[in-house]
Image (cartoon, rainbow, N blue to C red; front, top):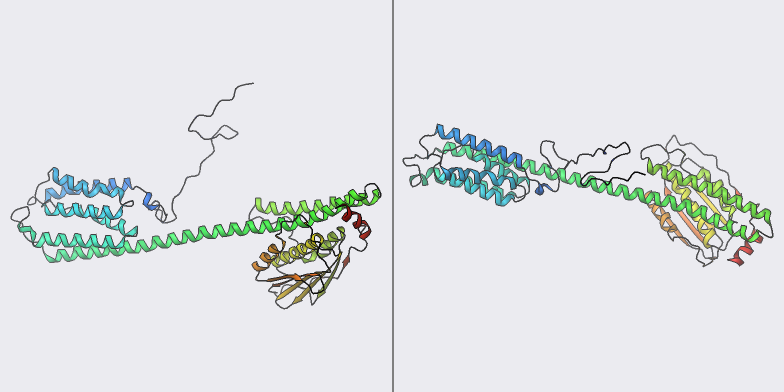
Length: 450
């Protein structure tokens, strides 16, 4: 047998055909496509190197061109280039340290202007730094830096020029200062607009993430409720039938065979419903292969309870109409869980199910004569909680309490909206369990063996 080759370090796993799986590219943020990571919460972690290099190159080239067109200004020297680089290179940290960067850039530009070097696109660095500070939420430092830049430039151009290089300089006109102030206000206004848009995108992104988390939690809760209701009812029937089969295996093999047949039927139905729930989980968005259970399967549910030795009487009050799918499934599961609780926790062998149809609501009531057995039936203790959660999801209520005569009653009211297309459904009262081989004479040995 050939020795297996160890995977090379730094390489990902290979597929069955020997090729590496394609990795999806990570896209940061949810804002406009022209700004990477624009609406992301980790904007401060970005390092805009390429934009900083582009701004630096533009400022350097523009400064060289401006020096040729302004021979009366101080010539470029190492100090001028140091101030240019000091104004441009810190922009690479403008999202990590926006306040410090904007003040360093403004200070370097004011020093450049005070030294009498040629005016040029160095002010672009200030615009970029102020824009980054506003967008990242540091509004007041950005406004203060912009005001300091304009005031410092006005002070140098109108008063301090007498004592600053170059010699023989003349004061600048106020029209130019007014234009600079107007452009500064426009820059700040655009920065504020984009800042508000970024905050809006961030809120929307966070709201979508929270909604997705809530949707997943609700889906997990729904699946947990479905599995609990299906398994609790079916396994209760299987448990009772298995005990009866063991008790009657020697004395009445025919009835033991009947119990085993009931176990097979109940387990098959449980597996089918569990598979339906899991199929919906594996293929989200696809239509279910089988319709969800509803109150039309109440006779089948009563027959299953009859397999566990429980006689179920059903009564329908009012004119039946077809319920919405969600309410129909919730009603079925609530009745199923109530009957399962009777099998597990009640000493009564009879249960009465009453379904009342009235305008805008359906009233479910499950009664048993009691008394409670008080024994541990092996349940999870979430039956009533699941009923209340199902009813609350539809705006309904659940009342579960002991009756004055010693029995127990579960009453559920589910609000429903009946549309004109909802027609009546055939529903007939039924009574099951009386002709089931699991009568009290077979249950007595089971209780004694337990």
